[in-house]
Amino acid sequence: MLKTFSITAILEGVSYLMLFGLGMPLKYLADMPEPNIYIGYAHGFLFIAYVALAALLTLERKWGFKMFAILFIASLLPFGTFYIDKKYLKPMLAAG
Image (cartoon, rainbow, N blue to C red; front, side, top):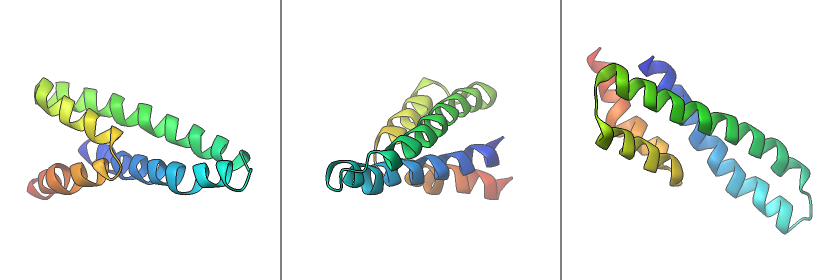
């Protein structure tokens, strides 16, 4: 489950950056709202999956509310999920 969460964290981070780096400029600067719709749907799905997996992992591993709060806040920040993956998830995966 940790590996699945790690992959979801990366995908959520990529979708977040695509939404702000590609979808929003196309919508507001090029008057093309269509790509923003699809990127937004993908990001919404990945965000919900990320938060759900974070909650499940927090309960499974008995991390506590503080760790869940860190994981949740990271999902709201650009590059936050990449930081979580590098700082917390990769070392846990390497440790087994």
